[in-house]
Image (cartoon, rainbow, N blue to C red):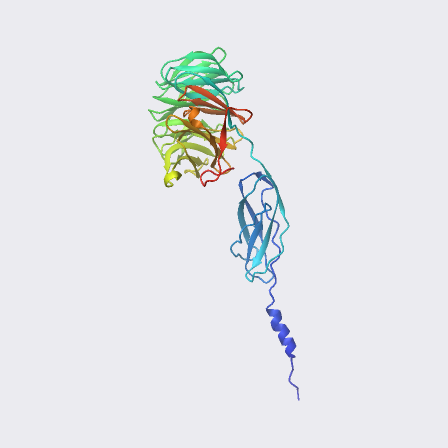
Length: 449
């Protein structure tokens, strides 16, 4: 007779206990991220984690700057977890940790190293000023940086300023209402719009007017192609852009754009012209190969001027759009858009006036916006990393700056046409300047870099 199989109670107990043992997750993989970056820019970090018991897991990141992220949502084994973070300048070791549903923690992952560089300095000090004619509007500098050409609307003159001595070396008499200014890349000629339906051509070797080109009605701005073969003129009253061939100063195309075109800019690669149409809600995008409008970017009210980042990945457009935030949080807008898109991708809120002229530093790190607050101007600096205002001209009521004309020939210099005080101001890096830009801190709209 077979005897019944007896299983010791201790063995049963061990089996039951073994089935309830929870193993912690495995350490996550080394976080993936850019190896280098710029300070206070937002970067995405990713990792994956698994659990030997097949449990759901969540992940957190130790950023290496004294801050740790919160736990992510629970994900399946092997799923990717992503988080964004902004780091200051320095070298940081970013690592990750996993947790399962029973709160068992993994060891920390191997760290990834991220070297973060500070953003370059930007011109923040008023270093010189020179008196010019009445109501200066447009301004440009020769490619070698030696001379400024300034269109003075009310007295029909173009002033020529030596940037070394900051003295006016010539006054060129024209007629009508000069507005936009553009120097050719070779520096031989400067084109100046006359709001009485023409464009003047000035030879820089002797500062003489050598041609006057009929264009559409109310020409406002002018921009040169990087090759120097063409210049583009926005005609406000006829809602067109004229294309001038510089070899013979013939108008070779007239392109219909939106209503009331004002500021325009050519991309660094020369493939597109962006036109801000004040009476519309759009920027027209012109293909320079076909001289046709190839796209439209819908923005907000009253686009006025446009700046293209040197990399060509974004444009910044000043506008009359009013952003209602409630009380002191009401601001005007500078729109950000990407080539190929059909709408703004971001909005920068600027205070103390309506933005007019905009220009980007050649390194692409900052965009300057001139904001007209009725009889005075603020100069506001936008970080392209965060699309926030990081600085503005302090004590602006004494400067007398006015809207429209601004040019950034290099990363350490900005020239501004001061419409209200009939002067041109030069801004440079801080080293004994008379008045400096103040950094912005402590508000949601105006965050520091």
